[in-house]
Length: 93
Image (cartoon, rainbow, N blue to C red; front, top):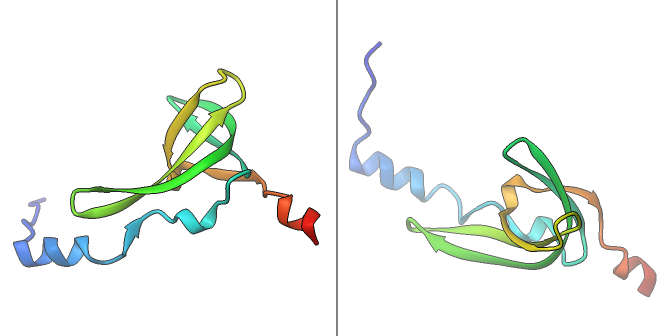
């Protein structure tokens, strides 16, 4: 099977499909999340959300404080799954 080469126009269109890779808006500081790293599941709490430009696109990251190793990790938001939403807003109401 022969692979088709993408033209420069097709590549540029591909890069501009979305505003960012991943969404920071899906998470809030204080959410408890988990992710996998080399087949090991890690759990932690989101302490910061930001985007970083890489390859002409904004990439969504979260700084997560891991419960097990007690260190901060910068994790792609697309790799995170929410275990518990931030309950601060519920407590204010």
